[in-house]
Every structure is written in C-alpha cells, then in structure tokens.
Image 1 (cartoon, rainbow, N blue to C red):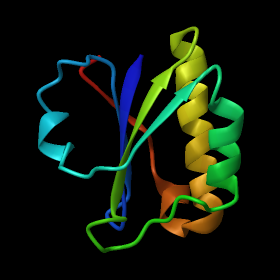
Image 2: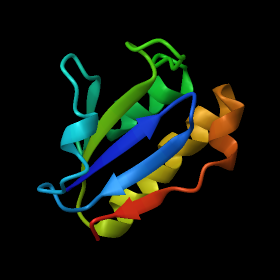
Image 3: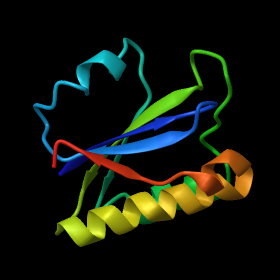
Length: 105
C-alpha cells in the first residue's frame, strides 16, 4: 500500500511507500480529499479522473488530494498512479510535465 500526494497549481505527485513517513502528516490537513484505489475501486476511480469528476484549482478545497493505493504489488500501484497522472494531464496541462517522485522508499 502506498500514499500518494497530488498538488496543484504547483504540480507535483509524490509516492510515499512508508505509511509512517514524516512527510505525510504536514500535508494531511483537516477535510483533506482522500481517494482509495484498490481492486474493487480502480476502474471506477480511473473513470472519475478521466471524466474530470475530481477538480483541481488554487483554492484550499481543491489544490491537493491524497490517494491511498492498495493493489496486488508495487508495479500495479505505480501503474495506477501513472494512469491517474495521465488522466489529470488531459485536463490540467501542468500535470503533463510532472515526474512522479518516490519518497521514503
């Protein structure tokens, strides 16, 4: 399982492999959007990203999001994050230039 922080309009995506990572808490604000992606929800959630159901803007409510990705292995989890990034890039040009970073590997 990984936690993934997505930020906009300063676009970056960071995968946190360790759930106890000290960099998770500072971005985990009250009312934070959190999306769970697992075997049961992956198709539905990727569709929601492709249809721009999740919006990003510079206001506090929509400038970031956490994904909790829990799939069968590291490769599948990384692929899910890349799929989300690609869907975001279709709607938000800055995400097209984002390199997904890995923290607390």
